[in-house]
Length: 333
Image 1 (cartoon, rainbow, N blue to C red):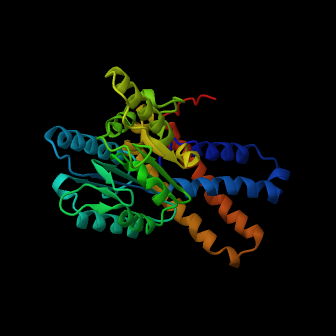
Image 2: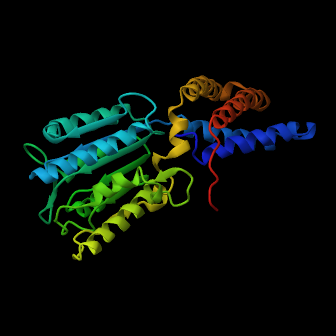
Image 3: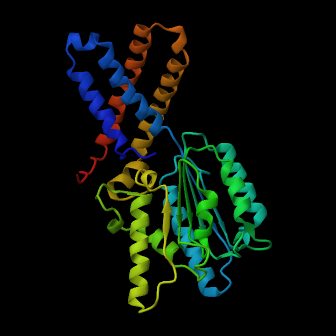
């Protein structure tokens, strides 16, 4: 994940504490354990990978085909800014978004996504609901909500964001919800069946500073949801039309911590070649941390904390170098 997340502050606070310690403070196992726990949590957080699958189904009409493709392209492009390596963003659009292709890509995602990773899946297009089963309209045989639930359930990542922007998408919330998963739908129920506008405003939220409510140059799922919802309502009002879609969110607390886009300095930081080199060094230190943790039962408390602290302080100093490449913005209280 990004180095401009609030978790980065834990590293800097812990490093400051380590530098200000007195001799007695150094000997305090409890204080050292707190310092180590904070750094260890950060190391685990920043080593997580971000995976995104964007699927755009059938438009049915040229105007929808063009709109859905454009939305999918933009969302996938922005997701690449969060990815740590090639292949972590998958895009299936139009004729490529077949049932077999969707099943293949979601199964592959289940194989490569680790428990600590972040997974985002975005569905764009038309959906239907007959009172019993939701269907996502794609080339050939539609894929059902039940099939998608099974495929999503196989993904091990504990942090998941599902953004279903299709018509009738509200029918999937109860079917797909589970602990650790944020679900956002363009409609409040399966009864709202008109083509939706939510996807275009979700894409807009990922690149528009207006969606960044606290001005920390990071757009969270919660901020993107609020922005897109407001824009949809404003669009209907501008058209003097009755709103035919009302977005919903499940798992809102987790949504406030789920990064979906970086803006400005935060985006530059993620793509800077020098920062990438530092990140490679950090990956080595993360491996060292895991190796020490794996030997926990073989070490005394004193030796364990000594070894772990030595690596974690290096980790914190390296993190400070990464942050220095681009100062972090001030976060509104």
